[in-house]
Structure formats: C-alpha cells, structure tokens
Image 1 (cartoon, rainbow, N blue to C red):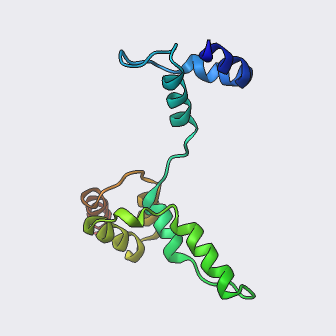
Image 2: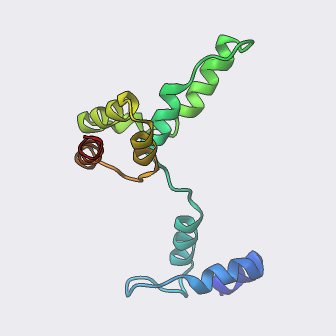
Length: 132
C-alpha cells in the first residue's frame, strides 16, 4: 500500500522512472524501503571528485569580494571535495591533473569519473608518447 501511495504522489514522470528500474533478487518493487533506495540512487548527482578539487584549487578571490564571502565560497566548494578521506594516491593524482601543461589531457582527465593515479599516469604517458 505504501508503494502504491508513493507512486500516486510522485506522478506520471516518477512512475516512468519507476518502471525503468531493474530489480535484483534481494530487492523488491513492493517494499517501500527498496523503492526509496532506488529513487535516492537515481536522484543523487554523481560526483567527479578530481573535477571538484580542481575547481576548489583554481578558485581565487574576485575583485570586490570580501574575505568572508571568499571563505564562504571556498567552504561551499570544499564540501564536494571529499577532503576528509583523501589518500596519498589521490593527492598525487590531483597534483598531476593541476600541474600538467597539456590542457587537452587535463580536460580528458577531468571528464573521467573515478579516475585513479595509475590511469592518470597512463593517460599522461600515452599523450607524451603520441606527441613524440
């Protein structure tokens, strides 16, 4: 009954999304907790941590912006950067992305979601080899 009520409330577009979900053996389309979990996953925006950190590190105080406004902007940017769980490999990956001179490679790296240090190095080496 809860699932039926939920589907009524979310309207036709929400029901279309619900109909597109795939269900595993452990999940049930008739349990409200499973349905809510599916919608949470569907609606939650994906985070590209290297890109978020790039934006944070590129941020500069704008002319006319007070220090308090700048700190507030930095805090907003930092909230998406997962600094609380950063590893050495992530620091190295980020430093490579921020420090390389090839803008095209940087753009490709920033477009890649969940890129690790090894893949970053491989992409940079491949670009160097191609240029050579």
